[in-house]
Image 1 (cartoon, rainbow, N blue to C red):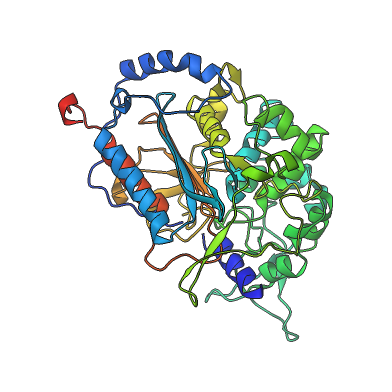
Image 2: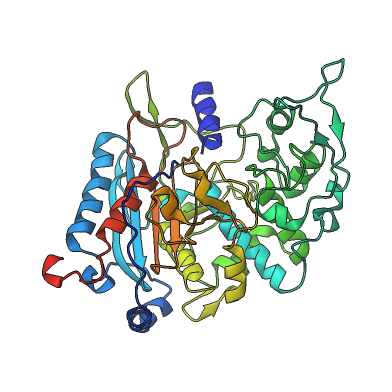
Amino acid sequence: MKTIQRRTCFSLAALAALAVSVQAQPPAPSAAPAVAARARAAATADDPAWPRTAVADPTTLGFTRAGLEALDARMKQSVADGDTAGMTIILIRHGQVADFKSFGQQTPDKPMAIDSLFRIYSMSKPITGAAMMQLFEQGKWKLDDPIAKYAPELANLKELTWDKDGKVVTDADGKPVLTSPRKPATMRQLMSHTAGFGYGLSGDDPVNKAFRDERVLASRDLDEMMKKVAGIPLLYEPGTKWSYSVAVDIQGYLVQKLSGQKFGEYLKEHVTGPIGMTDTAFYVPPDRKGRFTEVYHWDRQQNKLVMNVARTDRGGFEDPTRLESGGGGLVASTHDYARFCQMMLSKGEIGGRRLLKPETVKLMTENHIGPLHVGVDGTRPQPGAETVRFGLDFAVYVNPKTADLPFGNGTFYWGGAAGTWFWIDPVNDLAFVGMIQVQGGNRPGGLNFRADSARMVYAALAQTGTKSSDR
């Protein structure tokens, strides 16, 4: 049990590699076919049950049959190899479904289904961000306001002092030397992981140790969580480093405070509910328990994939009183997350329901960290960080071709600690969601899910001038 928990901690901290080697990025689709395709898809987008099944002919969406068959075969093989017990994948383009499949097992005695439920962990963050930006549109907060304007309990935070060798400065008693930030951390920095907070998922520094010792992420509720965060110094001077942090859990608290509603209730009423994300919640109710996927890890001693033991240090996913963690607490179906992705791809609306203004979506998916680099994606360290910046609760690819990545410029994405992943590519008008549940150790040499799925998706995207007979 302790070993699994240690591995889980490492998996949470060590976030799924993104390097993808593809020689050429597919050209952007012309505007006319995209507009026509969206018009054809309008009826399905209006249906809350969308997405359900793939179109009969994926070549109408610009994909080769052979390419998508290769994608499916590779994902299926990853299950056979023990990289995961099961998965679902969905690929959408021009508002229609090009591929929607499930492979392997949901539990040892039940096959994976396209409506299975998954712990999405850090893929909760963009959903929390959408809630925050709704309140931004209402004028309830501004990007360059100090965080303490809305959370006064964070007004007097000190920060660690670091020497030139990157070590924490301590006094004669071995205690860290704390200083006051030169400027207060802002809401923009909170939304972009540059406000200086710790997280406790990794690191042996005093801040991350305190997050673990105080069991911040195991708090009973958001009020208790904030009291704990207010007693822990900042890890870095605000604005100087990108550092994955508790920032989005703080955002969940702010949604609750600014809206006057319990965070989960706000999400259901204003974010997930209006766009048909009916399975997305902070816990799994009894009537959906049969759809909940087990989580696994690769056991190196046994040399096989084994099911994880349930944690006992915090409320389980079947507990309706568990912490409503905006940074990592949601459960969702592939259907639901695909609707969220399509909403973002359609500049803030889906099925005739507008969640965000187009200019807000643009703001969320722009670079807000300048030249700072992002080294993780929600699951594991990533190469190619020179092409990655951060918006408001999304990572963003800037000039991905310079790192030989296949994504369209401005593609935004994130991932979750149990291996779930997604990306949204406005240039090519497509989005992809992959759902697995592997946490606490991966098979050595196993599939790089994000990298390999991306390589195959863009290889399947037909080049301009490809003949239908070649598809």
